[in-house]
Image (cartoon, rainbow, N blue to C red; front, side):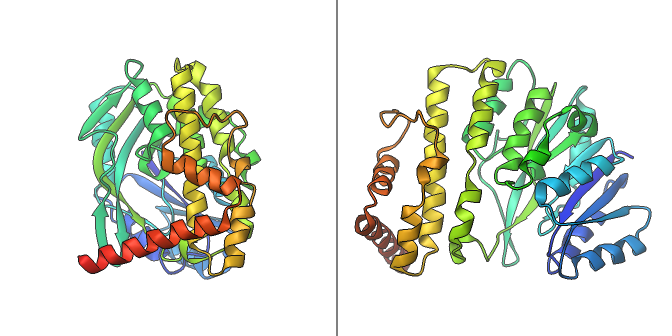
Length: 345
């Protein structure tokens, strides 16, 4: 068996058939599909079983109690028979030439452990290729230029997603990280696991093709305020994992650490903005501002960091000072600006 699709499934009855059909429609045929039903309460589990009954030689179904994304992926890895694994989220789908393109990359060079590719966003029946990429076309990353992909992992979104990687099963098994410690906090798991996989990989190939289709969630955080979930967005553990790996990567210097701290402040402000924009009342806005946002940041963060831009620093200081009305004014002004801009178009 050459390839294994690993698919965590949880309450996605609306999108699951399209996801499965996209994998079944691959032009390259040596693969299996492992559907890990993580305790779904809708008809997702039955959909999995129906497809298994129809394609018993291709599809394997695992039913388990709900433990979250990280656990479901671990079950997939443990049960994979393929030489190479690909992760697919069950509300997304893949292009029919995904395996064909990935296979061409693997056979083009010896010792490739990971093939990374790009994505397209899918919303309202429209596909829009993502502009951000690691490089314009095709690249081989090895010991001579590995710092490039480490930089991309720390400071961009181009190579972090597990769904944009085809990974040798042997490499996944070399990663001895105890991921059961992170079952309760899956936020940033893709980036966290990629730290270890990129470090272990001898050679990585990047192909700038939109082979994966990411479904834009119409019920995202921006439309559903849930104060209780803010703490679960904390990814500070990933920051410290980066710090631990900087000496291993030969990148342990003041500039990289400063950039990393600035990046973590940017991430914190981004999450704050998402939650603030999802509020429907001043009481909810106050709850968001009153949250302990400093818990998302390293204790030694320097406000004088030259990599932190002024607008980010200004917002951070307003949050720290609990400047409710000033922050509200900033968001109202931004909303008004966008409205005027859309009218002028």
